[in-house]
Amino acid sequence: MNGRKAKQRRRELRERNERLLAQIRAAEAVFHEAHGGAWESWTKGPAMLFVPTLCEDYPPDVKEAVIVRRQAAFTGECACGLEVRITPAGQYDLRHGAGCPGEWGMFKALARAAGWNIELTGGIDVHG
Image (cartoon, rainbow, N blue to C red; front, side, top):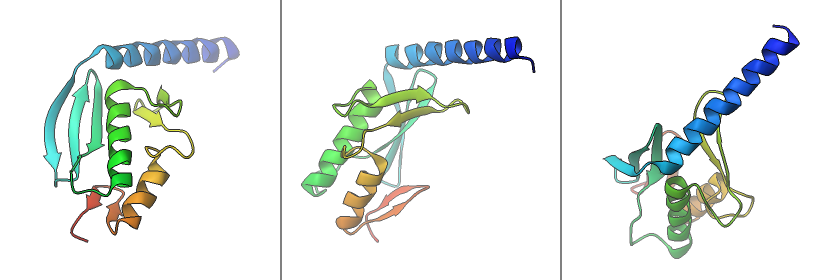
């Protein structure tokens, strides 16, 4: 691929991603199903969202992390300066800042501290 075609391809990809993000921002979230009591699936425009379920019996720090992750998924905003993007593979990607309770590493650490097993493919195993 020559330089001009590569530049055109990058521009088209950037424009596609901007359109997708605009569609996601403008859409209402629609609930689909609960997955094992720990995760829920929603759609928001063309995006499929998997968010943790909020339960009242979570420890306060885990509850805060769940709230932050849910709000960020539904609004595309977070106090940490959340980076929202469409990946090259076309996935809706939310990157929380370091130290934010919604950041995936922080969320995993809080859940593990509460004694839960985190399955990377399925969420929190509250029985484990």
